[in-house]
Length: 89
Image 1: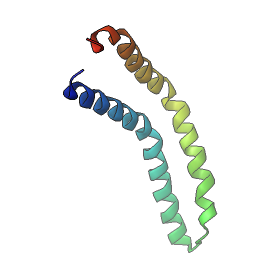
Image 2: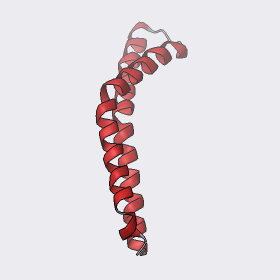
Image 3: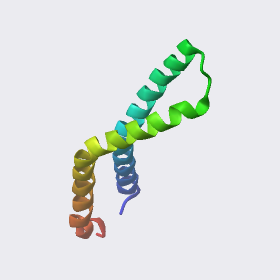
Image 4: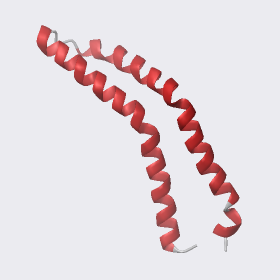
């Protein structure tokens, strides 16, 4: 294995992790911003009010994105396992 291959393989794995985290993080960010605007408009400064809606929305985003996430991780794992003989040369 060459250093370029190892760096490319690591880069591919990190990109996959970031792509898999993006739906939940995006939903959490948008819900957090909306709730912050509501809190600023109503002048309610309670930190715990944003926790439950963010968690629930991120869980729902996970449920919606789960088929796509599983497809991505299964295809990556299948590619890695099928190419093991080429990797050890």
